Length: 328
Image (tube, rainbow, N blue to C red):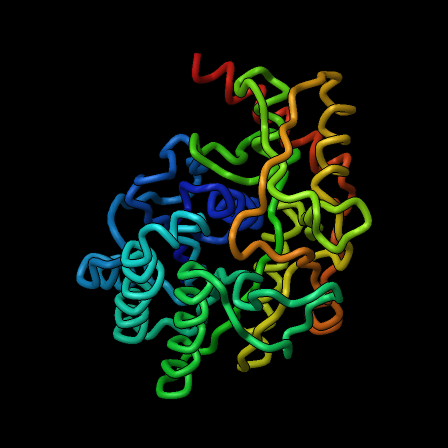
């Protein structure tokens, strides 16, 4: 039996592949390389270049490699782009997930873990966000993910498949051994943008909004190290296998840092100063998005090992420096 990782050439997917192969779990990767990189896939995994929308192709993979569980990362993730091009997001995130699920059902896949997002909560207010908060996504990105959650629940109710959903908060950092990291050229993540500014790859960076109802006026987010995130996926797969049930959980640390705090730490870690410009808020940006992480800690006995903002930023900076040298 084997695990299929969709989007395994991407940021989080490549870290998931490392966690699986490090645990000696047979792993198959499907990725169309539209945003991922084949060099980011550990060579111990089997790589099949293709699209999750191709039900026939995925069905053959499931049958050939005896796939019994799927971890689904493939999709589009940039919120402002989803507002400008919603059909892309409903295609890549929702319609393609529908096709993947069809192949999973036909192939008798037993467990399916879905990469979701805190964007399903919309504008949650200043308190920590729990799984039973109102679901009110503000963007096509958030709606495309929530629609996929609903679809997954309906499919699992009708067929012999258990599912897990992890709603991510702000994923950052890189593999502690330096094997992979956030490599997409157009990534919009704050920590990546700030490390690029520190390395001189950008002539400045922007703070979008300084008038939020937060201690320093800038947005507050819950930053989680990518390796802790994939550990949660591994625990969730085991949980589904043992308990034969379904679960939807937040994946964050339960504490937030402001944009200004993050930038300050990037400057400290890098030893570099860089220009920071204050510009207007982006439409739909919440003041604060911080997880209530009680459920994942109690259900999965998840114990993060890398819950340290300085450590997260250090790993991200070191990866960005290595990536820059690689691309020269």
